[in-house]
Structures are given as structure tokens and as C-alpha cells.
Length: 132
Length: 298
Image (cartoon, rainbow over all chains, first blue to last red; front, side):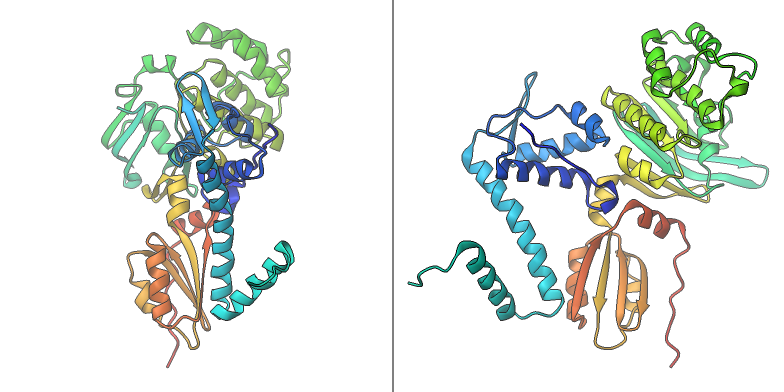
């Protein structure tokens, strides 16, 4: 445990979207482990001071995407289904990539410019690979 | 039938139309924030809901029937200024409430005094404006109502107790209550509500689930090489407002933002950015008159 969520109601981003993204990120980085129990809708709503229906909507989305599973009477748990959790990881980073690429395009960078930036970043974070 | 259901409500005082045509519903477990400038019709709507005023037209259903005295076992109404007796203590007011409301919960009342930092022995006369408001709220939450109608519930409270009210509203909704509250504090609505109704001149101008509105309504900024033709977008039903400054066109979209981005790009925009919009900017866009389109003199 140790996953904690923060919501920014003023950002204009739907609150349920903020929650879905944060749960996915917590699963991705391992702050929420497979099989771990999530707070109840009511508990999380009270803790974050956000509307319970909004929390319920986030949980429904997470459940539909296979990130969490809810069993009646027992609560919601992080899915033990590894592929679903991996997809959640990919979702989190692809959303960040999309925002960055969109921004790059809107300020007028060409496809090659963007590819060059990504190439440099890959080199920095993954190291130089022996080109084959 | 939802706990609160208002259909085509009209309320006229003489020749003044306070509420022109207002429909809204609040399901169980839902919190609806009612926003609008002063005189928009919020208080008149509340008066009709609790049976203090007779509607000129339309229908109201609250707790399964028309407004009636017996509903106050389930319905808590907290006006902007609670009617309190200056010479009685806070504890006296709780005693009166205990005798009046069958669902009044003594342990919870004690907890409310603690939450609102109220001294039971103090006479109301000696209370500050915020503390008076807190007495009304403490009694309302102590009776565990299934429907709450709160007129400006946090006005006069300090930030700590304002937050306490939001926490109590959320807790009540999580336990299944239907809550309708008006506020001038957009931030409170933005946090606690799952639905929002914005009124202007007695009519709803925005109504719906808050997260749906956040998802649909965006600010789109498009940069062109030359002065763009804004008339084309001003007439578009998917656009709430259009502004242009030099080569930049700024649209407040109501829906179909992706499609509009494509159209702006095809119209020659060199850069298009989409920003989310918070409730405050949505509120101003909805309540202000649409800005007149300024055409460049040729």
C-alpha cells in the first residue's frame, strides 16, 4: 500500500479521468500491487473530498479496462491479471507521449524534428544500443 | 422518481419573472451545485421547493410528492440566514431540534458541535455570523436527512469550516442523500458536486454532469498566418464563444472539439492547441452575454 491520490478540481480535467490515470500510474510503478485492496468508493470520496459518484465512475472505468476487479461485498482489488496491468502501464505513458507530440506538432516541429528529439531521449535514458 | 424533481418551474412576482422555465432533478446519492448571479432565481426556486412560495407554473416533486409539511422528516433546508433565537443557547436550539425531527441523532449532534467548533452553552446573540450559519448546518446534518437543500451553506464560514461542510456534504451523498446547494464559490461546487445547474434570468443555461461538461467543453486556440475569419465559427452551434486577437482565434467549444480542430487546421491554422476548461471559466462563459463579434474595419 502507500498509493496516495491527489485531485485538482480546478484543472478542468474531469475528476474521474484524473483518478483513473493515478490508479493506473500507481499500478504501473508498483505503488499498488496486484491483488491489493483499494479503498471503498465512500472512503476515497471522503478522503479526497470529491463526489462519491465521480469516484464510482472512475472505478467502473478501471474495472471495464481490467485494471481492478470488484467483488460484491468484498470490495475492489487491483487486478491479478498481469496483461491488463501491463496495458495500464502502456496507457499511462502513451498518454504523456501523445500530449508531447501534439504540442510539438502545434508549435510547428516537423516529423523529423520530433523523431530526432525522441532519438536523443532514447539514447539518454536507454543508453546507446549497438546498432544492428 | 428522483428525490428532487422540478419540471418547467415558473415563478412570477407581479410582473417580475423570477423563474422563467427551470427543470432539474437530483437523484439519490448525487450532489447538484446551483450557480448563478444574484437575482438569477436560485432563492425563488428553493422557496418553491420547500413550499414557502407557490409556483406560477410547472411541477415539483420532493421526497415522493408535492412540497408538504410532513416532508421535513426527510428534508433538511438550511437558508442563507438561519432563523435562530437570540436569547437561547446553542444547546437550547439542539433541544428544540430533537423534539421536532424524529431522525435527529444526539450523538451526531454532539459531533457536529465539535466539527463546527461551537460552544453549546453560548447564547446565539454572542455568536459571530459564521457561527450562526454553523448552528443551522449542525442541526441539519444531525437529523440525517435523505434530502438536503442548502442555500449558500458555506457563506460566512472560515476556510476550515467551509471544508468541513464539503466533507459533510460528501459523506451524506455517499450515504445516499440527494443534495442541492447553491453557492457563489465555484471552487466548492467544482469539488463536491457531480452535477451542476447554472441559472441566469430564471432559466438554466448549463445543466449536466460536471465531468461530462469538463470532457466536452474546451478552449481551442488556433494561430493563423493572417487574420482569421471568425464569423464562420461564431455561427457554429458547437461553439459557445469566439474571440479573435490579431492572428489568434480562441474558441470556447461546447462539443465535438476534435472535429473543430480538424476544421481549423484545414482552414489554414498553423498551430492549434486544446486546453481544458475549469468550472469558473465555464461559468463566466455561460453567464455573460456572448461577446459581440468585433469585425475589422475594412
